[in-house]
Image (cartoon, rainbow, N blue to C red; front, side, top):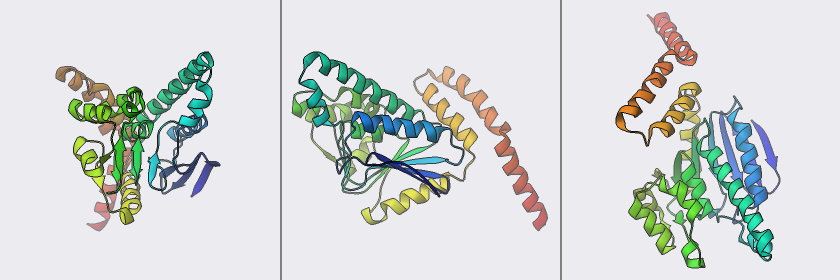
Length: 264
């Protein structure tokens, strides 16, 4: 087991091939500029770390992530010109970080035991999977504050249908875990007392799988999802062939064959 950390922002624990990223920065785990940059830096490190096969993202406590740091935004917005410049940098940095999370060549799992709101829900939606407890809720509250959750909706729209998306963005009210699962934002709802164990168990098992085909398969899924059917098959077929020729797969098959022969 090893650790990388930035105090009070993001901590990373790597055990059995699973990197668990825990958001800090206070109970709300707000995405300040510093938090965004630190999380992006850690994702870049994990992307090329051969010891890491799966990444779990969590916000400890009953707020998974409250979105952007509104107090930080308010401080910069006092001056119109500098405020716009800060917001441009903030949302560009956040978009880049969310892209790094969505495009990570390793499976990512959000573990949600509280509210995921605005950019916090964007984090959940940017992960490949999401395991939650019954007390988890989701929210895109921009409309209730005189705005609109436009950038969080980019990631959320890749998870849910248009009617669910409109309900989130136009109501601005929290939706419970059951609603989030039926909408496509959560894969599993686990009892709160077993959420960490079930998430870690799934991640640890997944970490034993051959990483090469997973990385290429994830990339292919992102690329062919919006293609016409014929084009999607044309893209996926050579990737599938590569899976069968992957050295890791060939080595695994050879080891299984040898083990079977030794028992004969």
